[in-house]
Amino acid sequence: MDEETLNLSVRKFLKKVGITAQREIEAAVREGLENGTLTGDETLPAVVTLTVDGLSLEHRIEGTVELD
Image (cartoon, rainbow, N blue to C red; front, side, top):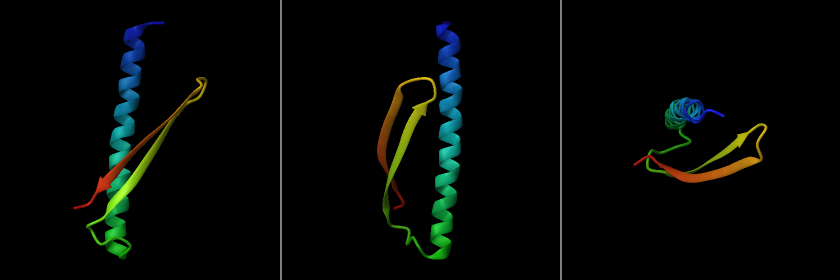
């Protein structure tokens, strides 16, 4: 195994995850504000579950998304 290749591959994957997740959350919040399901002052619980096929890896990450 090449440590540098692994490191770069993981970083590239996490960058893609971060950018995609941010876009999806922002779009869902805008939609919620537009259709009235959100008022704009919520704190929303958020969960990400990381799994990697071929590894016995399942890791849950919990946090919040604050709108105000």
